[in-house]
Length: 146
Image (cartoon, rainbow, N blue to C red):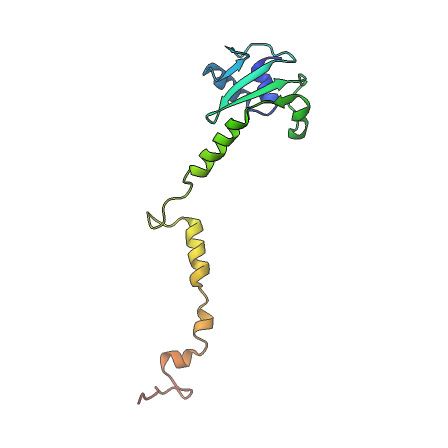
């Protein structure tokens, strides 16, 4: 099976086109040599893949017939990536600032919803008697303030 089709079928890349583009960018290697998309994958090959600034290593156990469900992937490959690479990925994710700093720019939709929940928009609870609010009595005359 071609390496681009193999990487797509084991769900390493979402589409075969993306797998082919990554191979063209020299981010995929079998052993120590960079490969082309047409390279045939055999059982026992160790494939090195550079993705998300991490160097993954997978060992081919079995060649799949076609694209498979995610639960069946461990039957066909074995992850032999160094633990240090996963630690590096974890620290990068922790250090990224996903949200803007507080007070900078307009509030996001999430921020606005949190503010609305905190402040509350329940007008009925604040003003139960509109006549008292507008200073009118039951007979239609205005109240006198002392």
